[in-house]
Image (cartoon, rainbow, N blue to C red; front, side, top):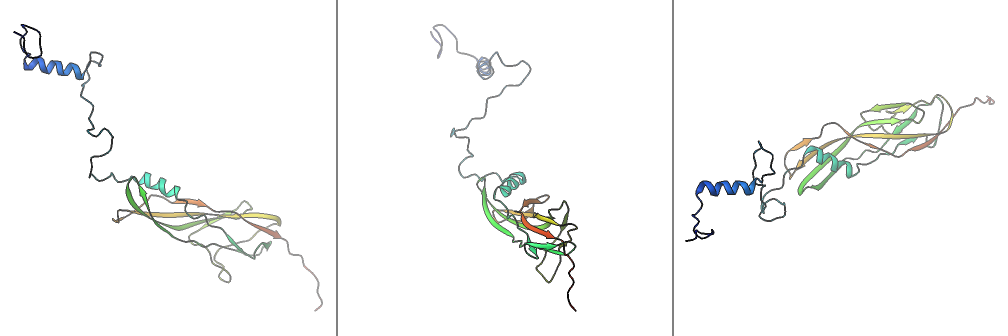
Length: 203
């Protein structure tokens, strides 16, 4: 008489034998001896996606920083006074308009609100010197950021690097601050530097 699924006259496999055969299917003879072998996790849907109705994993600070860099924080231009042309040893006024950024983006299925505020301003004067301030300068007559050029030049290219402090909130939750500042470099402003020449005039 044949056992279930066997050959005529064969006895049914014992529990121990069924376990042994199952392990052989899971761990073929080519498996490295000494390592535990277990079946790969199965995905009933076959898609690799999380089960329906489960919440997506929150993005990491590194992923959020990458997204912030991709949205192009404002590149600030420099206003110069006197405009276009200044004089050697004259306090040349520098300032910029520094708007805040407040927008919501989708990061891996999670709504992330981003607030970016410029808090550091590095002014490159175009003559090999630079200065860093914590404010964006002001128009004349409040000269809060100035530079004196020491020699004449047909043109110098002045530009600004703004350092943004970034805070973010996941799904309208509490605010978290990214480490460090994200820097955006602005376009150059060309200025001519002229030497003033004394001229005699009638009293």
